Image (cartoon, rainbow, N blue to C red; front, side, top):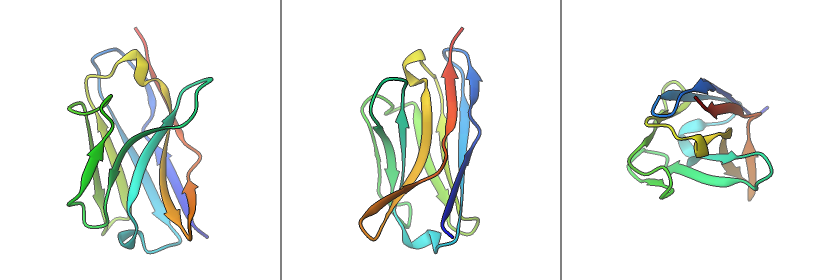
Length: 116
């Protein structure tokens, strides 16, 4: 069974940092491009960042560029998102996601709240 399990969310102050992780299982992680998306209350899903299978192609949404860093460890089947200089507008549920057989697959998400 394909599973994506996010962790690392929590409460951070503006300007603070959090590191999200996504543990993947049930599929050959290293063969799939991965991404992070987020969804704030009352809003639709928002693309955050993506990384290709080998980690050599990385993209960020303009809203997080320069503050967030995506990475992956194919040996550990893990996707990471280092988030620095957090802003209140980063508050959302964060999901790791991939596409399999033309369909999006995501985990249960982890809540990130940025507030003083």
